Length: 84
Image (tube, rainbow, N blue to C red; front, side, top):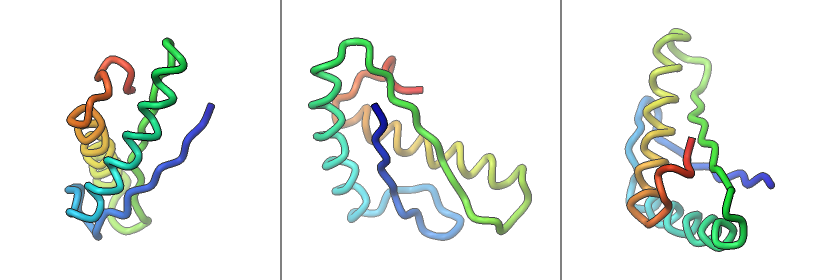
């Protein structure tokens, strides 16, 4: 099962704006309904960037963006052990 949820982070940023926080809560609702149906479901998060900057910088920024999304899901109630 694959879900694609996108957060449009501002350039060179990894924090959730108020609008993005609302999207995160909507995503949580969809994910939680699926998690309740599948006990072994795992959630894979990826953080993406554009082509600006070095590979190392963009890798670090992508990790920060994925962590931000993870933290939002955990804050809404998804068990951290389900997220990778």
